[in-house]
Length: 96
Image 1 (cartoon, rainbow, N blue to C red):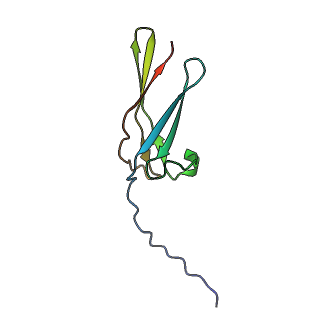
Image 2: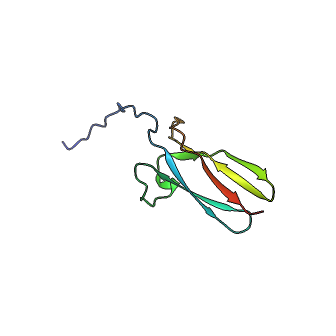
Image 3: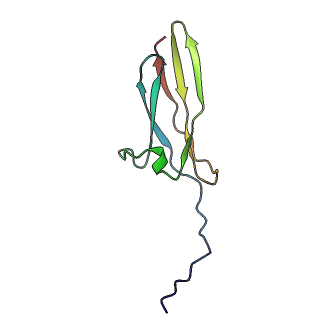
């Protein structure tokens, strides 16, 4: 008959198991560009919009004399809000 019966039972997929790796580049003025890649595929040049996950990136800036240090921490979050492990802290100096 050529009728396809759709499987309505979905397999449970767990939360993210890999961590992001951060590449911090200095930008113009007081800006920095943060590029996140997955530790399991660090050479893949896909944007975050190509992932099923998004980044949870809190940022803290500490003043140090004439310079500031930006501290970045990130982890993947899947579409169900399940969070993966935190990456190693990345720090970069921002010119003042």
